[in-house]
Length: 68
Image: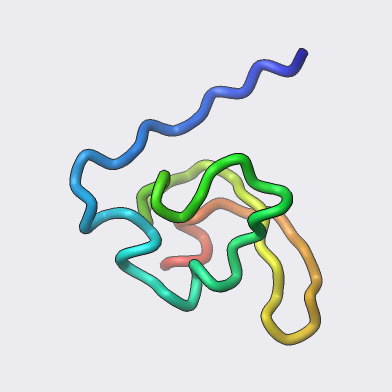
């Protein structure tokens, strides 16, 4: 079993990625991630999977790399 430390859910819902960026939420890979955009802050350094809205390419990078 793999031990993964998950990020804490944001206490303030205005900091959730789903509330801050509809575009990034649309490129969230729901099949490869165990979290949702509502579970993570827009400034998180946690690496998640993304899917390109143009070519459907999947890649992994942190949320703050996409947001900044």
